[in-house]
Amino acid sequence: MSAVNNYDLFVKFFKFIKKDDTDLEAAIKEFGGTTYYIPSYKTTLRNEKIIEEYKKHYGEVGLAKRLAKEYNLTERQIQEITKECRTPPSLF
Image (cartoon, rainbow, N blue to C red; front, top):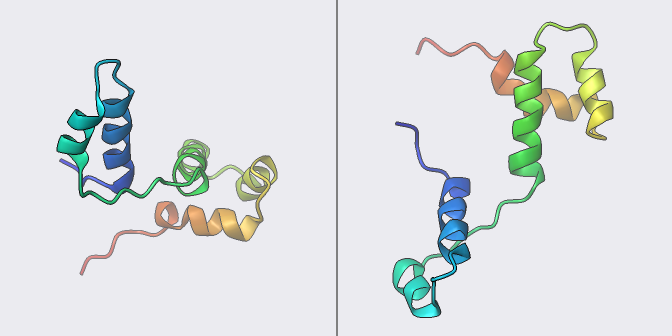
């Protein structure tokens, strides 16, 4: 089982309040007192798409350059976003 992250919590909250039968009292009972961070597009969806595409085309010549152009970023930003994909796991 993977760790629950802030994005997962926001999805649960969003689905809960989106229901037609949800009223304010039910929402307060379920989520009252909780602080929610609404994730930005760039730190969630965009970066996940970049990582997914990077993994899919790993080893392709000019991949970082292509992704940088496609997402209007620098190659360095692509390298930073995909850093975990390229770093072998530590033995210690």
